[in-house]
Amino acid sequence: QVQLVESGGGLVQAGGSLRLSCAASGRAFSTYTMAWFRQAPGKEREFVGASRRSGGSTYYADSVKGRFTISRDNAKNTVHLQMNSLKPEDTAVYYCAADLYSTGFGFWGQGTQVTVSA
Image (cartoon, rainbow, N blue to C red; front, side):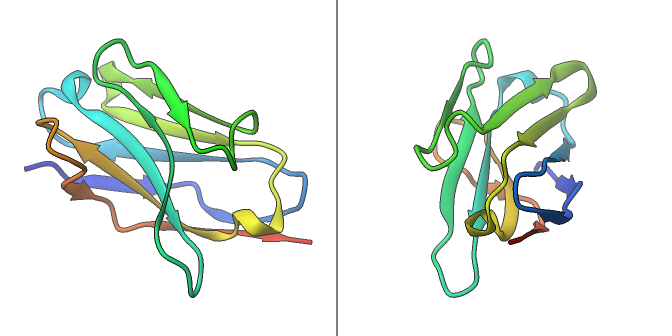
């Protein structure tokens, strides 16, 4: 089992930045693919981006590409989501998720609220 705890959400003006963090339990963090998802009110949860288990290469949804950056610190079992040039449409609850066995993201954090004001 893996436990994930997000932090760093808050209220920011459009054009501003926030950095989210996700701390994971477990002894094999470097072998997890870690991802960020988000869910806005009244909308389905959507993929934001991920850091692959092998080498940590990253990939992003088109909606955030060039503005958001995922990084990971395997020594600290932590993954970060740096969000720049935030837009009101980025307002959502952001979730961290882990894929341990290449079977999908079966482990989720509790979420952290990000609100971007116009």
